[in-house]
Length: 295
Image 1 (tube, rainbow, N blue to C red):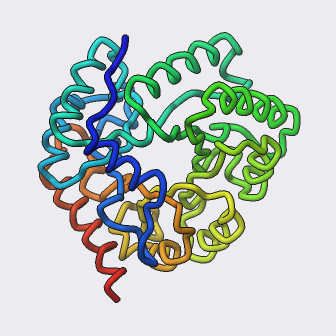
Image 2 (cartoon, one colour):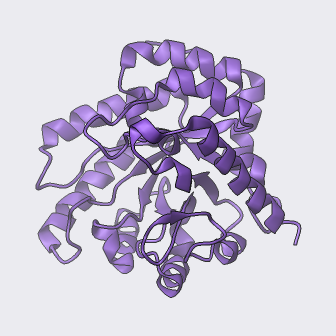
């Protein structure tokens, strides 16, 4: 399966996002990606997908988003890839980050399965031109399990070598090796590859802990997942939650990109999901970020 290269206009968009997304002390709102997981209410169910990416893409473009991070299950049907690529081009949308669910946990996944997943990821990145790959840092693993961490690190190094032109981003997600912010940092440092870094989201949604994690990991952070919670861990707007995004966004390095991962109205059962409400909330979050640069 072969895809032609993107049009010059899409190349221009991709270059803005991947080379230097920051031209002011806060992110340029035009370069903030929308995550398709925000538009998928079945994300945490066995169903996984209730919204067709082919149907979502025109709505995403109409809402003013022209660069996305893609929830890997939205690309599960490989026979749809050519049609998805065609709609991406028609709508002027650049797919920048592939949010992958490859599981490198040695207790759960044999080497053969990892190799198969790696080959599919390589094909997907080559076909769509993804520049970045989101990976879990050992979902379900304990930072204190030295032998499992060693095997995980070796597996991660193989994945990094298999995709030398793609930035591999370990998302600092909870219930993983990232539960110890220093431990996940040591893994990145041990692999020591130019295309490996961290995708920051707070491991703990508490003001000081989130800031301390950011400060510790800042030198290896290449991307941000924007979402916020209240003290009970319910989803709220970026401005009103416990994580001080204004402070973090202002302190992030100029090369760090960002994805709007969730908005509160999208966290609901499938039957209650309203796409237009979610997209309107996503636009409002980007407008809030745009306002930071005007203060």
